[in-house]
Amino acid sequence: MDEAWIRAAEAFVRELFSGNAGGHDVEHTLRVFRNAMRLADTEPGCDRTVVALGALLHDADDHKLFHTEGNANARAFLASHQVPGDMVERIVDVINGVSFSQNQGRTPATLEGRIVQDADRLDAMGAVGIARTFAFGGEHGRGMEESLRHFDEKLLRLKALMNTPAGRKMAEGRHAFMEAFLQEYAAETEEA
Image (cartoon, rainbow, N blue to C red; front, top):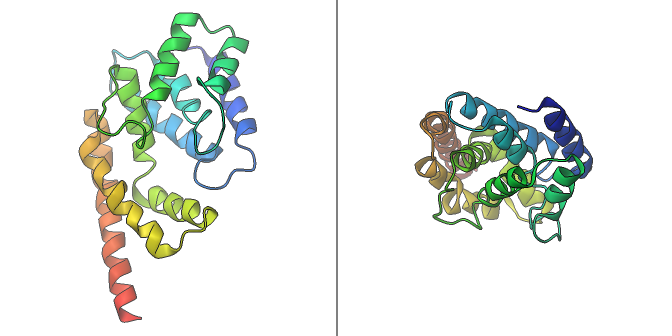
């Protein structure tokens, strides 16, 4: 794994996401990176450099945040660090396979893509996923009840969509935590 590229990508996303606090911030990106590397540790046949750079750059051109085309931000970073063209295309393929909304029902063709997709989905689950849901909702003027609909629309579906054995195992506890949260929320709002 090329550590210089990884450190440079981390610095790039810190700058790119500075000032963003709506759930797609640098902390989200770094959690996805750490999740991806944990999952990569369980998949010895994967290209760890592609996983790492795909995870770090997975939101660099997210349509909710940027008005870029053709993965312009990710490609510019990769070109500026002389990443070989064939590896750039593999990384871009990983990036393009991550989005839940844009990849409904599609599983990435590569192991690296499946790992990064799982890593991103794990960050949408559990305590962090709950916090991100309300941070994003608040940033976009959504009330609590509207934000709660996101659980049925996406979050509670993620456990069944995990690609890797380690991802499925990690998703179990996070899914159970979300279910417990929703039960507690319902109980508390019925009391009020």
